[in-house]
Each structure stands twice: as structure tokens, then as C-alpha cells.
Amino acid sequence: MEMRPNFPSHMLEDVKRQAELAVYRDLEASALPGAALYSVRAGPNGPEIDFIVWIEGVVRFVVEVKGGRYHIVQGQWFLDEPCGRTAADSPSHQAWYGMLSVRNYLGERLGGRKPFLIAALLFPGMEPDPGIEAAVTGGHVHVLWGAGDVAGRLARLADDVRFPPRALDIQREAALLCPRIAQPELALPVPAHPSAAGGYGLDAQQVIIQHVDTVNIYTQLPIAPE
Image (tube, rainbow, N blue to C red; front, side):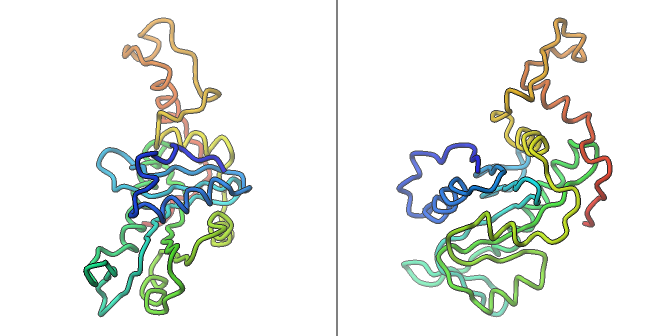
């Protein structure tokens, strides 16, 4: 699976990033067709998202990765730290709102049609925890435990999804979320005169984004419920 951007070299030894690094390498080694973005935001004000994963012919995923050992006590999330157990923000809420930010961001740029995404919460270093399962599964976030075959396990979460992403859809959507990775084959000719591009003198990359904004790829895709 194609991964973008490269995992930052200065974070390779960061203890707090080892769970994300393991997932990155696992996705990169997957033979499933598709692509993934690491550590991106859906717009400048969107939350940071660990991974956005497209599996060609299957579905799209937003994946929140949490290393360490988590617990839920009376509705409050806690994380085991070297100094003891500390309160933590809800990882399931992070996964859900990350998914909504991506869906809304793409929907605004794809003719108003919001693509279907699945929110997933992955604990690479934990065995299944019944308390977390009970608290999270009742919502709209899927929980995955342990490392290995991340893409394959994500794919098995998809159930009768209509209009799965094609290769061209994946390239366009990834370019919208991370314009610097736009594929050359998506580039449109730069207008010979600024007026041909609305008078703004857009460069090649901006022309790509302008073109995607005005084309509704999902003309038949039903809008997912809020």
C-alpha cells in the first residue's frame, strides 16, 4: 500500500510514536491496493488524524492509533503512565470527530456529496478489553486490538458499502487532503493566460484542486447521515 508522506526521520526513535510507526510499516507492507496518509488534518482547523486509509474497491477509514495501556473507569478514560494512571481524552471521540472532519471537508470539495468513511480506534499494544469494547462499540467507532494485518482487518469491517473508492477517487481525495502529494497524472495544463483560470494565475497544483472542487465525483452517492 502506498504511504504518504514518509514517516518523519526525527520521530523514528520517539517512544511516543512507536505505535504509529508500527502501524505505518504494517500498512506500507500490505498487498491490498490503496493508499494511506499519515498525520494529516482536514483543513487548517481540523483535528490531527493519525491515518486516513483508502482500500481500493472497499471503503475509506479514519484510524486513531493509541499506544500504551488504556482503561475506562466510570466513563472516564485513563492511560497508564510511568508516573501512574492519568486521565486522558476519549480516543473514541477523537476517532469519531476526526472521521467527521474528513467527511465534511471532502464533501465540501466534491460537489456536496459526502463520501462514506469508517472510524476506527486501534490499540496495537493491547489485548481486547471488555470494558472498552462495551463503551465504544455501542457508538459509531470500531475497535481493533493488537498489531499486524491492519489493512486486512480494516477491510473486514466494511459491510455492503456502495460506491467504494476507485483508484482515481483515491488519488483525487488524497490530493485534496494533502495537495503536495498530488499525482502528476492528475495535473491539468496551466492556462496560457490568467483569465482562463478565473484571473488568478493559478499554478499547476492549484488547477488540480480547482478542477476537483467543481466536479462531483459522487453523483449517485447518498449523503451519509450526520
